[in-house]
Image (cartoon, rainbow, N blue to C red; front, top):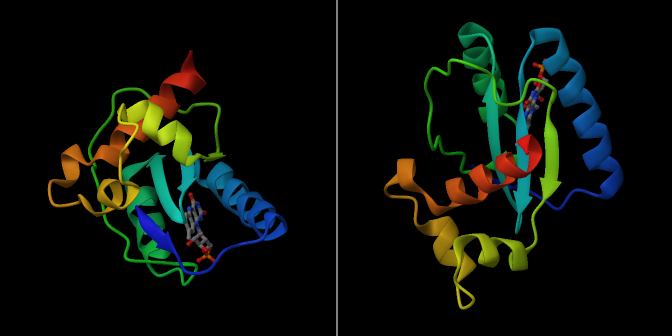
Length: 134
Ligand SMILES: Cc1cc2nc3c(=O)[nH]c(=O)nc-3n(C[C@H](O)[C@H](O)[C@H](O)COP(=O)(O)O)c2cc1C
């Protein structure tokens, strides 16, 4: 998860996604990227060595700041076989529906990062994964 450095236009998001997807195809990396209230939430999967190198590149990218690793590990099967990088902008309304609290303060969702493995934003990510795979 990270914070966007500056708001990107629709066109620059499209160009960015095109480049990301081309490189991911080359490296057989798949995954999903969400944009929620100016925060990127991303899941990437692929050969461990390539993932480590890409993680390093992404962490040095000036288009975002304050990157934190929410979770990592080995997976038996890919979750995003068909997606070189699925992308979705998630509305505040949808986050509140998923997390189940109408009065939810979204600041809390993003700042509640002490227990990163149970970070509420992971619930949002898993929910989106379900919609893609069902
Ligand atoms: C939030 C975020 C997610 C990114 N995800 C990817 C990705 O999945 N794959 C990718 O190739 N680049 C991704 N990038 C871009 C990389 O940081 C980097 O610009 C790109 O890999 C090109 O690096 P290179 O010129 O060293 O090959 C991402 C950047 C940001 C800000």
